[in-house]
Amino acid sequence: MKRALNFNAGPAALPEAVLQEAQKHLLNFNNSGMSVMELSHRSKDYEAVHEGAKANLRNILNIPDDYEVLFLQGGASLQFSMVPMNLLTEDGVGYYALSGSWSEKALKEAKKAGRTTVLASTKEENYKSIPTLNLDEIKDDASYLHITSNNTIYGTQWQEFPEVSVPLVADMSSDILCKPLNIEKFGLIYAGAQKNLGPSGVTVVIVKKSLLDRNLDHLPTMLNYQTYAKNNSLYNTPPTFAIYLLKLVLDWVQSEGGIEVIANRNNQKAKVLYDVIDESEGFYKGHAEKDSRSNMNVTFTLPSDEDTAKFLSTAKEQGFVGLNGHRSVGGCRASIYNAVPLENIEKLAEFMKSFKSK
Image (tube, rainbow, N blue to C red; front, side):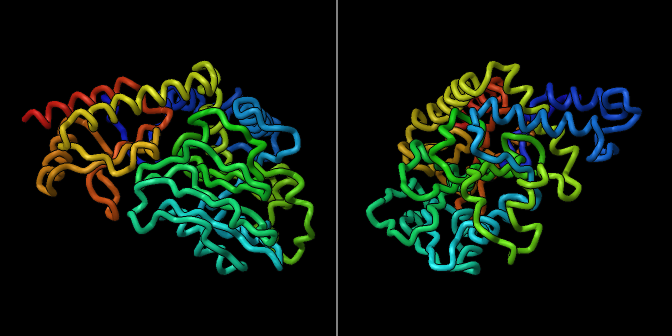
């Protein structure tokens, strides 16, 4: 079977080696005579998977001991509600930096839980750049500052994270694991797995333990981070197969040389496509400002809607998948997450050059 040239924004490409490893053990995991999907989440075999995934993530991202690593469900969209429900104090304010549609959705849900304020936004320029923050505007009433580290729709990414005295909360669904992180800058990080971590179905939350000290007995049990921290994310049945694949992806990252190697590769991959855009004499026009460009989602437009339609139809004929831009921006988008090999990016670059010349 010929594999597709997969540039989907999410669910996205998984490393082929991970899929092959999962396939080998799909019917008989660890000589259990069962698939991972059939194991009890209380069994020793699954416990090794669960703990292995947590240990791998701690090792790769150098997560300190005073942070919890939680496996949740509901995607990043549920975290839009859980973050303010757990962190927004009665007399506090949730501060939000708006850099795209997902941060807008996070703000919308937070407003239902308590007081919020927009610290900065680039909405008026159609989110072409990351907003500049005036940190002096963060008052003593701040419960946290929320950012979205990478914006899949607009192709922008925070190049540096702000140094703030309040808990920094980051939705890293689309760029976690793309480069090294200083975890200690953050109070809480959440990420849906379906971009860089694994398949859809599991959400990773990394949270400073001191943020879980409040009495939150009024919250629904399943919306309280303390429930997952106290029960090792096993209060209810977790998405066992998704966590298994997450562990395999983390194994793959380590086998490739670790996150520094992945980061260098991502820089190289992004440069290949941005060079084509910048050298196209305006035929391809990037949506994001150069100082805000994403290494995960390369967004660009062509001179006309007709050109775009022809580009996408021709690309599909040649095996490229997922290059349609989001309807709010139009044009095209190449999502080049960790699992997308450099070879596929180079093929796309050659196709873009060839299409322009014709």
